Length: 166
Image 1 (spheres, rainbow, N blue to C red):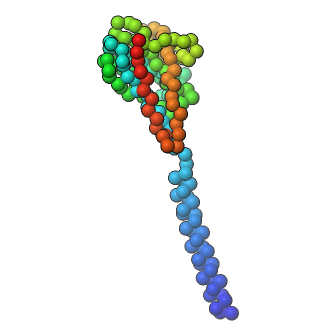
Image 2: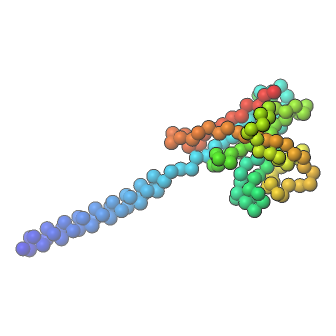
Image 3: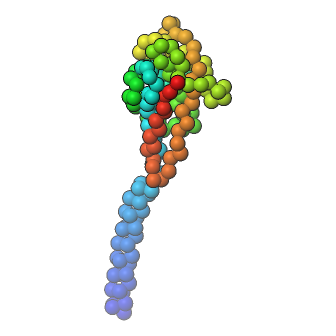
C-alpha cells in the first residue's frame, strides 16, 4: 500500500506541474493570439507638373472627441515627383479624406459627388484643428475619400499612396 500511495502522490505532483505549465503557456499564447489592430499609412505622390498642396481630414476621437471627432490637417507641399507621408490611421471605416490643389489654383481631383466628406473648413495657413474648433478665417472645400486597401494577416500595416494628377 505504501508504494501505491507514493505513486498516487507522484502522479498528483506531475499533474499539478502539468497544469501549472499549461496555465503559463495558455496565458502567453492568449496574449500572442490577440489580433493586432491594422494601421494604414497614407502617402501622397505628385505627378502633376506644378507644386501641389494637400490637406486631410481624419477621425481622431482622442484629440477631437469633444469637438465633433474630425481633425483637419495641412498643408503638405509636394514638388513634382515628390512623395510625402501625411498620416497613419487605424480607422478604415471613417477613413481619411483629402483636398488637393496646385499652386496655380487648379484642383487635382475630380469630384464625382459620391465619395466626399463635406463641407470641410480649411484656411491658407498651418492647420491642425478639430471640426468645431477651427479659426475664423476659413473657407469651405469638399474632400475626397482615400480608398484604403484591405488589411490582411500577412499585411497588418498597408501603405496606400494617392497619386495626385491633373
